[in-house]
Image 1: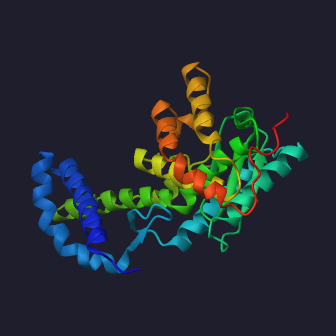
Image 2: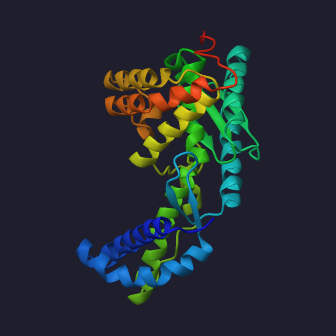
Image 3: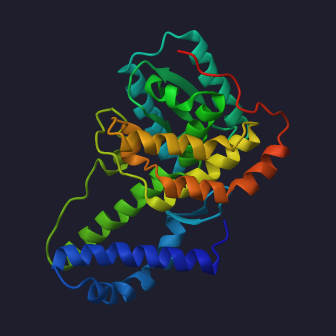
Length: 304
């Protein structure tokens, strides 16, 4: 990929911020002074960094990303975490619902432009209101979230949102930012005559989905909004009515307000702002939906 001035500027700002944060923590000085102090370091090193780190843009939204982790390593880690999670959870015995999850997932995967992924779709027999997609297209849905989905379209909202995180490599992006902070901290400590070993488990932190890698790096608000945007396009391309998306997140917001436990909401905030943002994207999504090769509308209802 050609590195444009926009990409260079974004990477420069990200690296400057990461190293600046490390200086703040190490030397306990003012954040503005720290950023000024490291500006020359970053400018001098960013050119060489571009040669070794991934400079890419997110699919569909084309946002520049700083990516320090090779995708092959991310895919291998995702597979490992997924196999461990599935092995430790009971899979659903409801063949009708299992088939629905696979059917909806395969339709979304077909329009994802990632035919190289080894897609898997499993339904976990657990009352948690949760779902995830790990790198490589490793998707799991928990039975507890299905009543909120109500039908295939609602399920497509959840699955397309989670798949969007994987397609945009949001987990790898979060790890990259933390790797930059930790790496900068080591650099600062060495310059100060100290040595702090890097955390060996940093690469595992973004995939703590009920596995031994128990630390989960939460997605940022920007990444959540981006996953909503990409997910809305994906479900429309797959032939599901995107008009159901705002209603799904509204239902989750109401459930959260009612004090009910929803693990999914701990890292996937749902509120009126989110529904409003989705409504603002609806014209674009409806245009995509009208052009879908096959339309399923809301699909089949979910019956327990």
